[in-house]
Length: 585
Ligand code: ASP
Image (cartoon, rainbow, N blue to C red; front, side):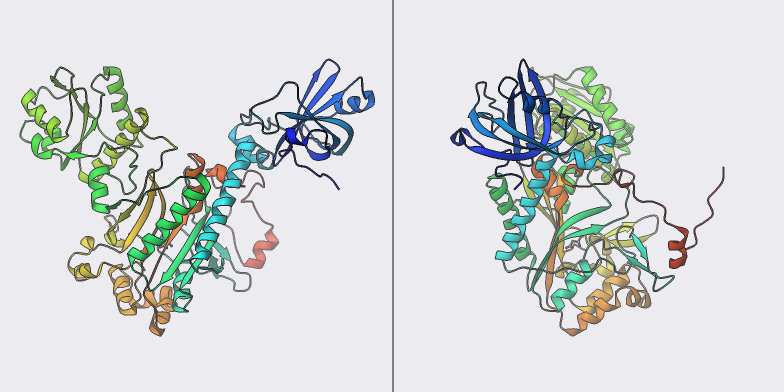
C-alpha cells in the first residue's frame, strides 16, 4: 500500500492518527533543528515535519530531498502550533517516522506554484509539470464536472451518446478541413470532421430521436485566443422538434450547469433577433452585462457641411455615463484605440455633456449647442455623460463601434467575470454574400432551414431570407449555435442550388444525405456547444488554452511532443505522397 490518506484530507479531527501519504516535494524549509516539507498531490498540500533531535538520520534523509521528488511518508497527525488558514490542511502537520524515496526528480524548469516564474512557452513544453499546478489542474477538474453534468442532464432527458467516425470525407463548405491520406486508396484522402453534422442528421433519419456526443472537432483555421485546431463540442440533435423545443431544452442544460457547478440561478434567457443585435450592439454576440447600446443619429448630423457625416451611410453613438470629465488625454487614448488596425476606424467624434448643462464637442465648428443637445436627447444622455460617435459604412462602423463599446465597458469595470448574462440570438439570416466571389454562402451551414414565411424570397431576395438558426451567447462569447434543419430533399436541393452547386456537384458531395432524406427523414434540429469556451467562461479565463490538458500554440504546434513533424520517406512512399522539393535560399 502506497498511501492511506491523500494530501488534502487530514484535519484536526484526525490528530494522533498514524497515516501514510505519497506525493511530490513542493517546498523544503529548514528552521533550526527542524525541517518542514510541503507534500503535494492532486488533492492538496500537507506539511510534514522532521525533528533533528528526535530522529537525526530521518531528518538528514529529508534534508537531502529535492523539489518534485516523489516520496512516501508515514507519521502521526498533530495539531500545528502556527496554523495556515489558507490551506485546508493548515491546522495539522505530520510528525514523520518513516520516509521512502519513490523517485528522484531533476529540478523543474519553473516553479510549480500558482504564480509561476515559467513563461508560456516553457510551460507548454513541460505541460506535464504545468498540470501539477493547482490553478491549471482546477480548470481540468471543472471541465470534467461540466462534461459529467452535461451527460447526466442529457441522459435524464433521454439522449443517447453515439460515436460518429473521425475519418470522413472532405466537404467544401465551412472552414478548411484537415485531411488524412489513405494508404489503401492512394491518391484519396479522408478529412477530419469539422463537426458530426451530417452523421447526427443521419441518426435522426435512423430514428435515434435524441442524440448527443461530447466530441473532438477539427478546423484548419488561423488561431486566436479562443480557437484551437482541435476542440470539443457538446453536439446534440433531436427529432420532432421546433426551434422553441430546442431552445428550452438547452437553456435547461445551461441553467443546470450554472446551478450544479457554480450554484448560480440563471433567469430565463432574453432573446434578441440578429437584426436587433446588430442595430443595438453592432455584434451578433453582444455582451449584455452592460447597456451602452447604439443610437442612430444620422438624420441629426447631415446638412451641416461636415463631410465625414454627410458622406456616411451610418452615424452611430454610444453614451458613456458619467464620463464627461474625461481628459483630453483619455479621449486621445480612445481615438488611438479605434484607429488600431484591429479596429480600423479613421477617427472618433466626442460630445461632452457637462454637469452644468453645457455641451462641448470635437465638431463644434459644424454644430451649435442646440444641435448637439438633440444628439444628447436622442441618446438619453444626462449632464455628466460622454457621447462617442462613429460614422461610415453601416456594417463596418457598427463593428468598430462595438469594439469601442466593449473597451468602454472594460474601462468602466462593467464586465465583471462573476456576473453572467446569457441570451439567445435568433432569426439569423440564412445566407451571407461573399462580395468578392459574388456568391452566397450559408451563414450557419447548408442544412439550416429557412423560416417558412421567407421561403418565397429564396429566388427574389436571398439576402433577406431568415433562418431557423440560433446562437447562445454568454458575456459576449458565442457558446453554441444550431438550427432547425431542412428535412425535405426538394428544399435541400433548392438550397444547394442557391449556394451555387450544380446538381452533379451537390450529388457528389451530399448525395448520401439527400438519398437518406428520401427514406422518411423526420423534422429535426439541434445545437452544438463549444465545451472549451464554456469551461473557460466558468473558469473566468480569457483563453481556452488553460482548460485543455494539452493545447497547441498559436502556430498550431504541440510544443511538448513537437508536432506536427516530418515523417520518414518510407511512410510517404507508402502513401504515394511526393513532397514539393524544398526551396533553397
Ligand atoms: N454543427 C454545427 C456547428 O458545428 C452546430 C449545429 O448546427 O448543430 O456549428
